[in-house]
Image 1 (cartoon, one colour):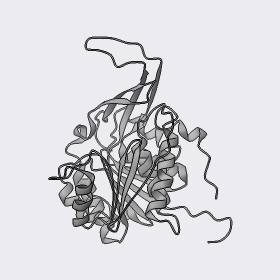
Image 2 (cartoon, helix red, strand yellow):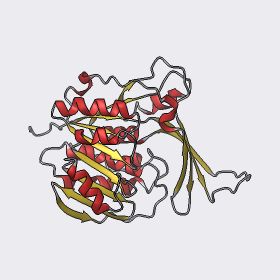
Image 3 (cartoon, helix red, strand yellow):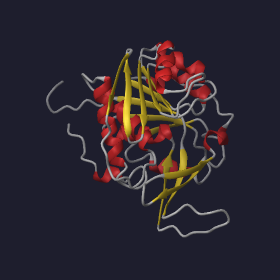
Image 4 (cartoon, helix red, strand yellow):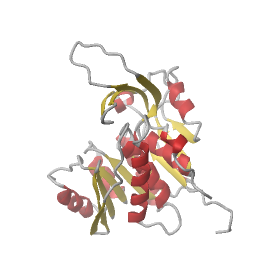
Length: 299
């Protein structure tokens, strides 16, 4: 690589886009109680969306395949994808439907959050015809399991072209048994339980049997567990005083996709770097404000 020329990887992200309405609260209201929140934020959200924005922020070229639609509120999502720039492929571009809205309360004392969201049910009949041309020049594809037929078709297109497929999964979803044979890397929460699995050891064994070659299991403050072609390991995450944990996992996934596409990257090193970014993000409210304070990558 020539000195002074920065390598800019391309990543494609497939899955959910939401409108996140976030309130900072001192306590979760009781039934039939009204409270006044000292702070609020509105932004685009969703696992694939947050990951794509993180990938773009770190220096990559990000493309997002999702459903947004033409409802006036959809402009919140579109505007939020302008900086850092993410190219949008909207599977609902001809539909006047309110996009999924997530109502989020974050406890100011601990950073823990409570989320209510319609998620993918808003566009439950979304089409699944993924355009293979969107993968031109791509080094990596991430699917979050929302809009599962679309995720499967995208993963199949990438798999056939030798492009690394990453699966982000917080829980087992219908259709995942069809998706897994197309997946190279799985980044799962410690709540992820395939059929018959009761613990992380069985999750590693299950995914290994499906030929998922690299697996990470994250658990908040707990060490990240790794399986790299069957070789197990772990590493501790950086401890921070969290202001907001919303989207930390999504940010980790986007950062991993970026670092994993850089020259000479290893699975473990990419996960460690990504976990540092995710920990840093927890020091600030929402899923974007941390970017103002994060040291910009050097070319």
